[in-house]
Image (cartoon, rainbow, N blue to C red; front, side):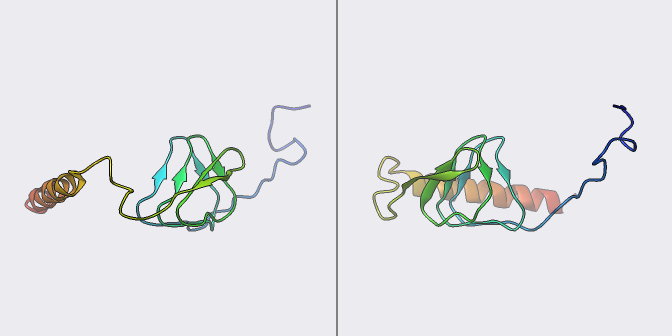
Length: 107
């Protein structure tokens, strides 16, 4: 066996790249791998370290290697029930982002 990659059997490998689609309100955990051409629906949670090999339907939780369905998230008014001031926080963040954008354009 050689350490020279040109001499090893199978040294030629292919590289596949492709666009992925991630819907709104998703949470994707750290060290997650999403394979090319995959679609992740709105409101999806992907567990840390998961490998997404198939499309993920909206409002679901997936995890693992390969990522598998764990449970469904029910959309609706109770989603933000534990964060009553979330709208205020969102507006404040939008304002800060807008101000940062304006400062960046002035440079």
